[in-house]
Length: 354
Image (cartoon, rainbow, N blue to C red; front, top):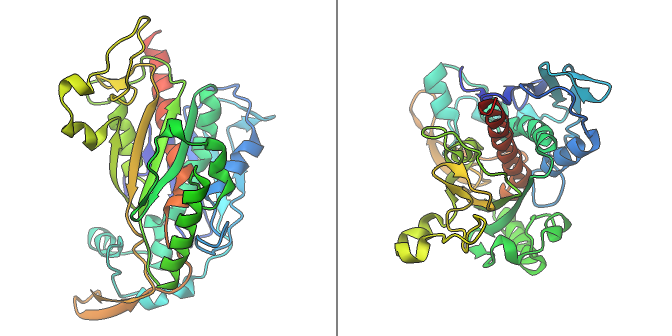
């Protein structure tokens, strides 16, 4: 099975399944001498972990990270950083009913057809449990990036959309509510809506917006490794993501060139930022901002038509503990993947100047 590594210089390889003994990863390419803030790493893990509020899955995982290598006396040594995260609250029996059944819109069918075998316990390798490893690596990447600030937040849930851009919201509000929306009034409405969806045995999707500030000029390697292309790949690799747009995105298609062009000011900054901080695939020093679309969680507590491993029609119904809406827990994952991309290009940029 290929495709388990991400990055060129600052590279993350993850391993493990949702209901296995542990998940983990290897971070290669992290420079030596970086003093790590382990409390900051743990704080990122707490933002992603299950069971943190009434509107997420009630699986209880402490998500404590055990570092095995690459760190000595609190500093990186330049060698591979190995780590594990134990799975302590698996309830594999919750999935015994789908052993020979394919759940609609899950990876069950495609995994089985591709590999001839699948781990049906919680989705195995296809589970979003794997993203905990990304958050560990992302937390370290953030510390490498120092002054670069990456902030993600929930901007919509279903039809409920925050009609403000990142410059009009209060980032300090994000961690004050379980939805992680930077507007208290909208967050309360979103929370009530997610709870009502859960009572119906259904799920709902949403969007996460992200802004990267204090980005240095020159990150990005055209033509095939453009910065926005790498960010797009990173975000689309996250479970349940169905779309990515940066800068003006699809709204830009409704504008004229005279409206869309970012005119320069003295010194190189621009009057507007429809380009989203990236031009020609290279960061231009302005804020990078983008939005990611997440589909509704595929597991619903309602009966659905499906087929079994023999191809015969049958019925399935979700059991166990699942998120009614994935976007609140996706916020730190989005930040982590953005940090991995920026760290990789930061190191590539340093090499290109040698």
